[in-house]
Length: 353
Ligand code: SF4
Image (cartoon, rainbow, N blue to C red; front, side, top):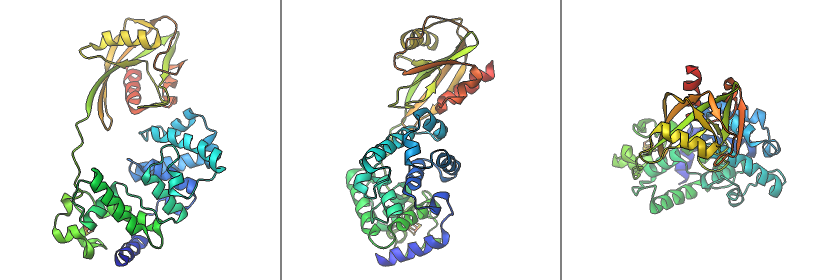
């Protein structure tokens, strides 16, 4: 165990990438970086991380921010529940911990949105606690190094993965150790073509010896994403367009979009749009003109959004399923925090005008 630790820590200290969150041990900054890095590439995260910390430099500034502001700073990073959870967790840290993130992994896990991985990463990197942190990169390295051939998405495989990670995290510099595992997974022990001859762990690696590294880790295939059809319209009245905000929880929660909704089974887009507008915003739109359709892939759903426009809108706004609305100049719609499907719809419908 200690030879493995020495070899990987030595490699990490020489080869690690210089990333902004590696220049600090401020628990708040480490936490923000870990939240951003989930499901997102390092190169994408860097400018977001820097801007976010400039705008919200500490727990107090994040806790007092409006959700719209936080979502605006997150705009384009996706998986927006992470941003909502960060703001909620900052409020909890102010109330329960006097504005300082706790160093204990169990206390960290009580914060909104903080799971086992984030708690382990923050506790080990910012507080030197010997806690494991297993993300996708670390899971791949561990499965190969330790010869874990069970499905790592199933309980038995996952238990083994975390047990191996916990055993290896015990020792000096647990934060560097966890980051070293992830760094090796990101740069050397890559999914399809691991570069074993360059790897500091090859002498003790089970998969290298067995020659099955590229087939590990084993994971059940994800079910195919469910297809979803929806409609949305740019409704313009007296030169102003209507934007509606989704409630804070759920998919794209707290984000703004064009009014519309999901289509029912076998419901045509034009008819579905008229129904959705009547039921969800209380408006009737005449002369609806189809502009086109945009597609977006979420992790479990594949959305096709039919986009329309109308400048002949009657009725008073009554919301059902949204929690706020605004009429504003069409050119300002994109200033409101919005998700990727709305960004695509806006490009289509505003490009069309
Ligand atoms: Fe991964 Fe190969 Fe290194 Fe094993 S020897 S940890 S499979 S890169």
